[in-house]
Every structure is written in structure tokens, then in C-alpha cells.
Image (cartoon, rainbow, N blue to C red; front, top):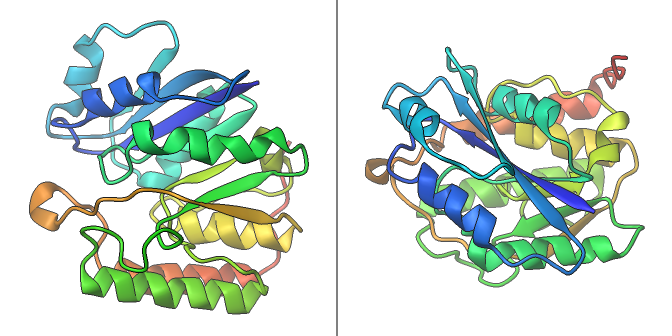
Length: 239
């Protein structure tokens, strides 16, 4: 079995090489190989040049976009390049550390009945390290909304760690280009009958001065996306 670690990145020059190093070094469960797919989403801080000039091992693939399209578009580009049986989405910063989390995230896939695993920041600590109060509140509201709309006992809808079998994408299309990718994936996965298994992950939040891209206002667009994808017809899978 192979896991494709998909890293969408935008303006993370200071951290991207370290993220890749840790993604390659992180412990995996026995019998799982890895590849790393990095998608530079039109960075304008030199991230693309840094990636282009780096010497990576064969299991690292890099794709660069001229324009910034958003996290969802970058993740979908990574899907097209990935060859793994399992897709693991890794943010391009150190809020989520591969060294501490990959083994925990991938262990449930030893059960063939498990298709989707979310890394929950709230299972191990009610107040994750470094998470500002406004982000904590936004996360709680989103999670309660998702759990109510889809009658699913999840604790962290907006987690950056969404891990799933490649075959899950056979059941629905993903169309959102921005951060709305996360609620869209949750909504469509639950609507098509998939069960989400959660495991605790270690998280260390950063602030805007440290390069955090998510803003509190994104909670409103995520809320809208949850409701929209709950009531709208499921988009058919394109051939």
C-alpha cells in the first residue's frame, strides 16, 4: 500500500523544505510506502524558485502553478499527480507536524472497512495549543453545524488532516477552489454514505504574523459551503 502525501503550499518559503523533510522522515505503519506531491499554488515569495532549485529524492514530485487558485484547486491538482492508494493532505506549515502524526493517522487503514480518517485537534485537548479564542469558537460552530446537518459524531470538521482511500473520490466530484474544499469534502463524503473515523493529533497553532492564512471570516464561507452542499444535488462524477 502507498500513501500520497499531498502538500498544497502558498508563500511558505521559510518552512516548505522542512515540511518535506519531515514528511519523508515520519514513521509509517508497516507495509505502507510513501510519495510526496507538492503543489505550489502561485506563491510570490520565492517558494516556487526554492522548490525548483532543490534536489529531492525520486519519491518527491513538485508541481507549480503560475497563478494562485486556492487550497481546493491545489489539492485537486495533487490528486491528479498522486499514485497512492491513500491520500493524506498535509498543510504547508508546521501547525501539523508529520513526525508526530502520520503513524496515528494511517494506522486505522489496517481495517479494510475504514475509508476516511480525520485528525482531530480536540480529542487530545479541548483547547489546542496556540489556537486563538476566535478560531476555537469558529471551529466549534462549524463542527456542531456539520454534526447536526449530517448526523455524524465528528469533533473537528475543519481539521487540516483529511486522509482517505483514493477510491472515495470515485463517489463524488470536488469543485471548491478555496478553503471551502474542507466542508465540501466532509459534506459529500457523508452524503454518499462514508463513515469518518477520527484520531487525536498534535497541533500547534500559529498567528497571522507567523504566516497563518485562515482568517476568522472564513468560518462564514465554510458554514455556507456546509449548508449548500447539504441541500444541493450531488455533482456527478466526471468520466
